[in-house]
Image (spheres, helix red, strand yellow):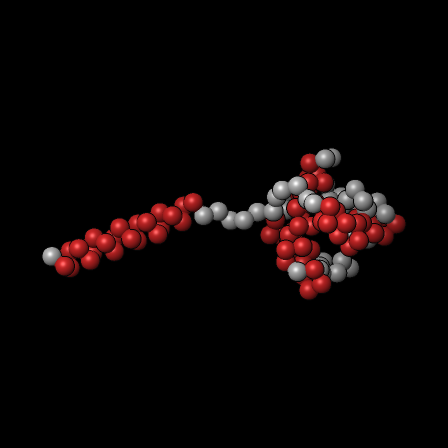
Length: 118
């Protein structure tokens, strides 16, 4: 009897735990950027990518940067954009150490919002 009750409670408990995992979602970068994120973009990114993200600044042209609002860039996953922003790519420096993960994610959110205003 005790063995049956133990199995029953374990089964119900496991079902509850695994059932609740259905409601867990992978976090994504979203939401309207705040003024601090816009300022951060202007300080760290705009000199190459431009205020509008088009990459048409002298440095952006020299480096042949893609427009951050382009379908190609926007098709990248949040994880990939976070990786590029955090670790850097080509001549672009990484910002993981100087800004931290939260600010890097906020910048990616800002890039996503720029494309919506296109």
